[in-house]
Image 1: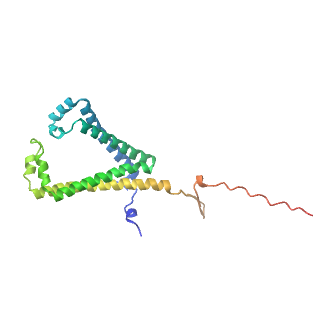
Image 2: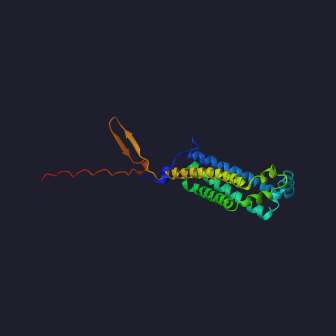
Length: 225
């Protein structure tokens, strides 16, 4: 009987890429995103007045008023940690070290759990969507049109959007897990060398496991009496 893990196991992702290639691309993409966030945070720490001026011009200052120096330092440390975790996953997939992929996989599971809790909170407390919309700036695009929408329809659209995100994140988790299984399987499976002739096939163990057999001693010579 095939287990559920083996049934969903595949060495390809996105219909064309190998799971190793997909994990490497995913790790690099996450590193680029966190590098951009880290650059913004370091700019805010080095020149907070100029940073606040730019945020005011793009009309996002209300969302960053609570970002004092302590919170920015914490966010910077988290960005550095994320860059390290994504770099480990990229290196582990490239060099086929399964243990280096585990931290990135754990981060994906944790992120999926947080988004699931958000979906559950929206489903249990649907009024939180309206409360969040009221906290948006007054010049937010289409704010009045969105708030005039029926609450049930608005909650359904939010849940549908979160559901699509969760489905995509679950697919990425499966790709990284398949990459971990592939890399760990290559490291633990014994490689057999097939030597085929016209009518025979011989299985040989790996070269590093071949043990030299000492030569047999010749039989004692016959001594006539």
